[in-house]
Image (cartoon, rainbow, N blue to C red; front, side, top):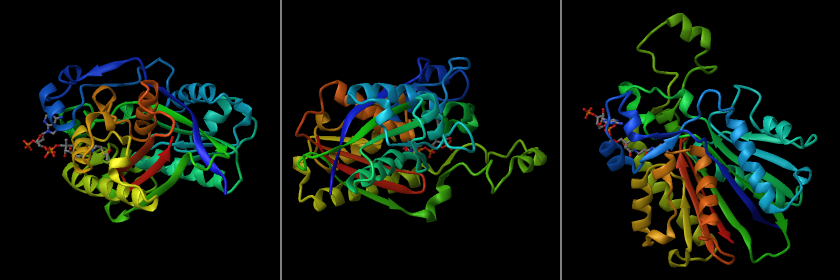
Length: 335
Ligand code: ACO
């Protein structure tokens, strides 16, 4: 078996900063309400004309990751693109990245696991490298939420939380078995599929059907979230899946150097931090500045943590996510 390790990280967020104060101009909300419930101060939204799409943001993050990994883009064997907000209904955004990076004929696959998307993609990449099939894999998590949110008082329970942005990682094959991705752990519970979802437009609710209904009360084409149910499940599943990863590697929670949780909500991260007895320095959070960027959140946070020198060779780094599906997962990494 081969080992895989992260050789380069990159991120990109649109320039347009949307503060909580900005949101009060389009909906009944307040800076204090948002900060108290979510920890978020501001997020980035794509602006019309800035040239960004889900794929383009992914490309920008990928270029940095490729440069830092010191590989040639033509050596990429596979592109994995995690998103819930692809550029098109079909094809997926991975092929758009392949085209933009001008990589000839490498396979590209989209991963549709929402907040857990990056962990699912990382795990998939890890398997392809461990089995010897591929040497270099580009893993991207990117979201363009802003255009699809209901920016009004009716949609405020969801729309204040989400932001746009992308992160990317290059996974490479390594001969050093003491470093790299030690294990990944994935789970799903489809009975809660609709508790955090966007139901239409879809094959379940085609566009002509939505148009024909012409119903101003129809919110099926906006994201829906049962916030309290998500919160209750998130804190349990985050804890379980981190413990599962530690146990499999015969590690204990006091050996964690850095936990990078999916940036769902600062209150969820703080709950996990307390449960695992970690200090502020041992849990990386940047939801304050970017909101919840779903599949983008872990690679963005990991990139910033690395840029700030918080990830050093030999460190035990734990990634964990929970979200729509419900799906959840963790990755245990010896950096
Ligand atoms: N500004 C002001 N008031 C608001 C807002 C807002 N943005 N949103 C909702 N409210 C109001 C509601 O209308 C409601 O008013 P009412 O009591 O008059 O009916 C009141 O605030 C309470 O609403 P709840 O939805 O019950 O608010 P809650 O306390 O549950 O907080 C929140 C909502 C923050 C989403 C919470 O449920 C939560 O933290 N959930 C965890 C889920 C989460 O963070 N998901 C992130 C994305 S999913 C993921 O990544 C896993």
